[in-house]
Image 1 (tube, rainbow, N blue to C red):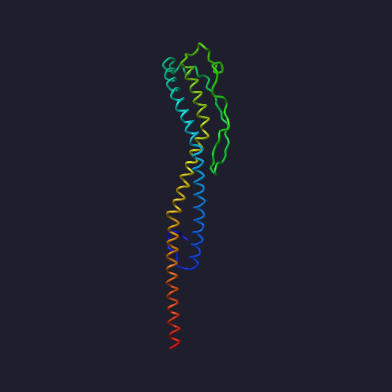
Image 2: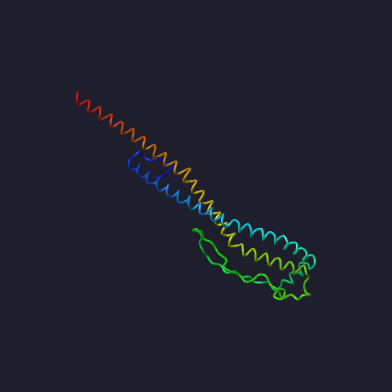
Length: 210
């Protein structure tokens, strides 16, 4: 039975609509509880995420000026030579679920920040600006990796919250009013038929008595 098509005013359709409306009410209640849980989880993650973002912004505000200073001193070719060979940074990922939402979680990664000796650059081989830029971007990368799980979860939770809110609105503002309107129409039609039947029977009884 389509919610947008007016069903025939029969007892069978009346019962079917009542059962469907009960399912809609239960589904709406479940979705409301899911929405409340998602909101609570988002609020729980909001403060740590805001703190992490502030740290990232603060570190980026020092890393990029340091990079510009290093470019001015070493040049693009000099920095490229200092950064050779490229570093392979691998992270360990695991698929999981939170509130039924599929996520990819970073389990770990090798240390990003290194000592000048670990970088393989002789002390006299690079300017202080290049060393400062390198350290700043290593710290920035560490902060980004540390915040990645939280940011990914926040994004997925936000998407789930929007989707759940749309489902609740569809049930509450479209489907439920339509079903209730159809129930009212069928009740009214059946009541009118019942009154007409009573009147017909009453006329028949009066005719037999005369």
